[in-house]
Figure 1 (cartoon, rainbow, N blue to C red):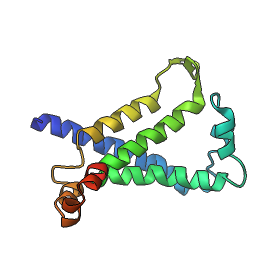
Figure 2 (figure 1 turned 90 degrees about the horizontal axis):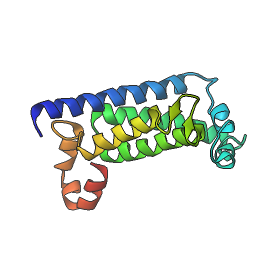
Figure 3 (figure 1 turned 90 degrees about the vertical axis):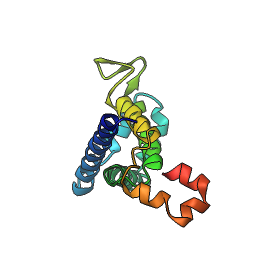
Length: 158
């Protein structure tokens, strides 16, 4: 990969990391934030998403949502476990996408693609381009005895 490509992928990783970290921290720091309204108004798979909004499940749903975004952001910014976090992050973006999908429309003005799909694609691109390597924490981790011994785990995480 050329130096300009590496810089572009690095900037994409850092930009996505900041975006996700900010989205997570906004939710973590706001004691009134809840995913209930988003889940209860799901257009697609309403029963599935409404289940996550049940009073006994909602605190877990909120916690996972808040901290998944926050940890995804930290992972991307630091360049640690980028392959794993980008796959999980893309899955999370699909979970944000499906409730607003009213096939073939998303919101009144999108046709099939919205920002969540773009985020998912960008996250998968960052993960597949090994954007955690080249002087980041993942590069150091991949050289440790543990990850040299456990190559499959290394492929999955780093």
